[in-house]
Image 1: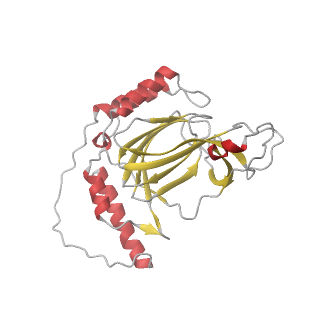
Image 2 (image 1 turned 90 degrees about the horizontal axis):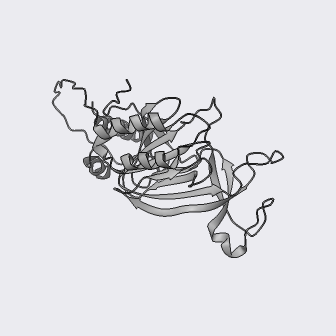
Image 3 (image 1 turned 30 degrees about the vertical axis):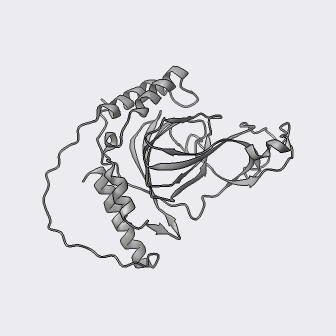
Length: 284
């Protein structure tokens, strides 16, 4: 089964499930198909994907390190030229997803993720978002992240904390912290790769799919609860002209700032993970 086949099959299973439990109201009609036996052919690794892997292996040196500007440019150049077919997708995936009703649980479309490759220094992950699906506001602690939009149109909103390092006498995680808006705009593929850093570049961000989207993320290092890199979710609280310790903001600048408060994963946020069935990287 191909990468697209796995996505479509998972989507079909989800449609059948939500229809049974009462979330979907439209009956699903199945077409009878003749079973054909297909011989599995191991997909050839696209040059761009293998080149990305080799570059990541050279660039990411492990936790506590940030790639040098020249290395950032090298990865961006590779990612900027990557196409959906480099990870086993094609433009027809968007048409297939748009042709179906959005699969929803409690009114929210399901986001699907898959891991292309993962090691202790970096990971390559794909995210598939039906139209109107949201990956809510979250952070990437101690990470440098490259995001390449492969398919669709997506709205990205991102923030940086004004004081990224909390003081020793700070309150609990639920304390509101002042954040500055970095980006709040639409992106349509093909477009340049976006980069965020541990404390700058929009480390806390949110994805909202305007059309069906596919995003390739490169994370270095990857999430790791054991190593203290367990991500957090946030909710926005409108800014008002108050000071946050030593940080004060003029009232006329308020539209560029918000208070962010750590929160639980939103109830309407749903993400399924599937096995990656695209071209396999040669890590030898």
